[in-house]
View 1 (tube, helix red, strand yellow):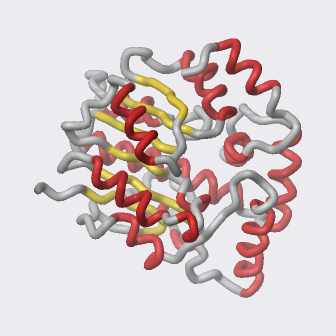
View 2 (cartoon, rainbow, N blue to C red):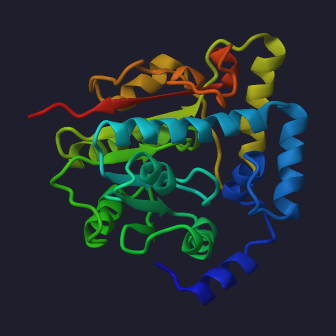
Length: 282
């Protein structure tokens, strides 16, 4: 955890380029973004008009997935690539489902700006005894998991919900996501749940949408977070063959939709896929 003054300095030193975390925050209606982030975001929106709705769909899926995990009895959450605190954080959803306040949440991000904002913003809503934010890199799994262990917040002998939401579309196949996910799956106790989602290029509606998704990736090549879209079949392997919770791997709006769910009437238009799998007993 970085201290408050370090957090302020990190934020101040980041304003010369767009932050992927702040751009996402802008798209989902958050408040932690700056002019440079908004200019980049609107450039993307010109080519992909529904990008804000796609991002909000990812955020809504996170909330419904966390709710499903908590209702299934999970009391521990590790959120890798958590990004910026905004409405509907993991700890807020978990506490709403379990009013006895017996859940613990560890937020992890490798972007200094996201961690800095977490330090500043989580203070308003989090319980410091149950909710922590730490710095670690998804691409350095052994170090990341050592930091999870060292946090003394998560009992790794018990089931955990490992949340990797809206992250895998920033992981290219040449970065060996299969080995990374295999490592993380191996660390989890039986009964743990794995929550995954990402943007997809499955079945574009027409040629213009197909080209727009290609253009989207080209835009993000100019940032520190290049993108990589996958079809359902390409993405499913990341669950390691674990049994899926109902309704399986689906377009995100089809995962236990509620009255606020965008694209509920046409889930395939959301460009987001996701699901939850449970680690079998040994």
